[in-house]
Length: 171
Image (cartoon, rainbow, N blue to C red; front, side):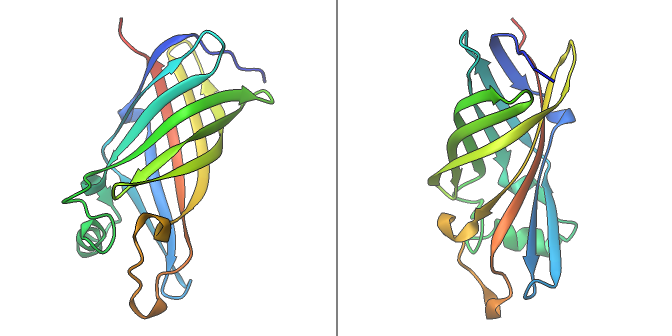
């Protein structure tokens, strides 16, 4: 499937998008899953077909199904929501390759610490209203100052899973 995308301004449809995390804890025996309830974003497809944009995730909206754990994840030990209320991904370049594959180069900022991040997304749906991208990638939370690790229970990389629905921005 070869995908073409109209040039111009696009916005994230937050009601049709999900961003979640998955992390193994307890020495790899338990997987914690969570979803950010508040996400936003905008983008621009340029005349050459490349795209740029920004996605934001409200740290306080992370829901793992356990209020005590969610409060701890928002604390200074992890996301430090009081000082850094948003996670931001700034896509500096997104290009369609190999039909429905999108190569994305950008910068992920968590806890005020920005790191380069390259990932591959896939166009999973396209219709007259917009398009949907799906991606899954991993990040090392220690690169963002989240080194808290009681008794070695929380190690390794965190997987981010995203389904992002973009629609044309209102003129």
